[in-house]
Length: 218
Image 1: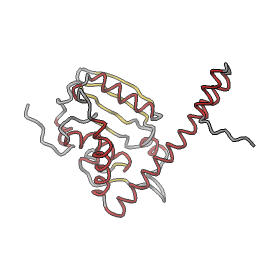
Image 2: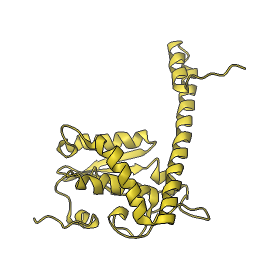
Image 3: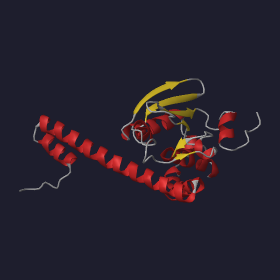
């Protein structure tokens, strides 16, 4: 039996080059399905590991683990010229939308005088919530110690904590601004909301408070 080792996307390109549109279309679906399967595996692997850390060592240890990821992986990606906060708001919003759509998310965009509002059906953390992964006998950990890492909430699914730690808390500590201000879903079927402020330094007082910071003087 012949075993094909070429990835499905490469086979799709070959089919296109040969003019076989139907086969290329089929192979694209195969490639996407395989990526989705690997994504699900990785998301559950990460969430299971964070759950173990939280249950064995406490919620502070979850934040410590996420901070290590932030320092070693996220922070170098935030290094740019111009800096993230100096980019036009539309550019920042487009970058976030592009990343979330690539993560199998769906997005609606609206705008007001002070910000862009990005409303996602999240393809990772939201997908876990929609699947009931935080319910039942083998539920993943829900953080219950209200503070900056839970967006000031009394409960936050543990996977979503990487957004508060890596996208809001640490960028401020690094001397910049949050990537966006996030409002993860609280119930299955709800969207994840991101606020991208046109002036990233003019955050509402309630945002500073939930991050454990004193709002700047008017």
